[in-house]
Length: 281
Ligand SMILES: [Zn+2]
Image 1 (cartoon, rainbow, N blue to C red):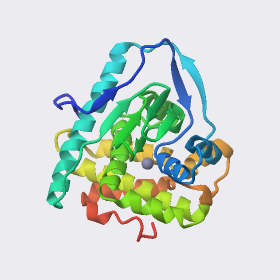
Image 2 (image 1 turned 180 degrees about the horizontal axis):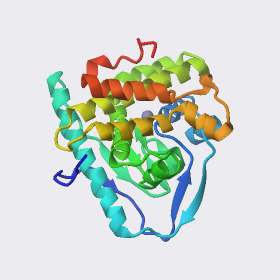
Image 3 (image 1 turned 90 degrees about the vertical axis):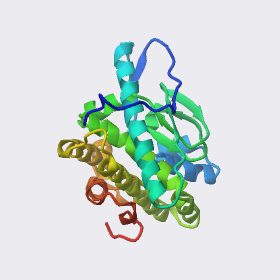
Image 4 (image 1 turned 120 degrees about the vertical axis):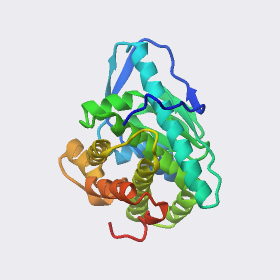
């Protein structure tokens, strides 16, 4: 991919502090917000639930201040990718007779307060449907390459596109329906629904990649995204954290499922092919 000619989004909210050290996180996973929402609906503190579910053991250490040039490059990257999601999803929504409302992407360090309460970087990047904002600590990208061995720019773009996928689900009313269903089922059933929601967000990320023309996304980039999708599958995270796999506790899908749905989005480019609810995969 090539972001050099891309324009930047105006919808970045930079809440990064100018403090000394920067925490580097080891743990968490993307997309945990679905669980947080269920927790909110159940009247529980989502962070308690997230910790309880604990797909991985989160620890952190402090790293000396990173140089600001690097951070600005990170911000520009996020901004260009966000702009491309805005343009692509605006077109796709138009083609189905809808209007795409652009979400805001909040950059933060360590902790953030938002429409879904307060969250730490340990939950990974997430989307809050209540304020329609994506929250991202750029240190997750370090984690992606260091802990998950998923490097390459497009691995990062995939993470952003996945979170934007949750925004698309929100606008289309899909996540609302799923959360309603989750309230009427037990924990295992709720986890299964959560997996389907996550896989669909992966699928939407693939659809976005396919419909993007400006970033010159190629097969090599897709391979990077698949590496990332495989690395953060629930089975991979559980195996890494506890040495064994408990399928009923999955909330995001296995590595294979995540790769399957991202790839399906990339191959079809068609949002109508993303019925993770009616498909055994
Ligand atoms: Zn997700």
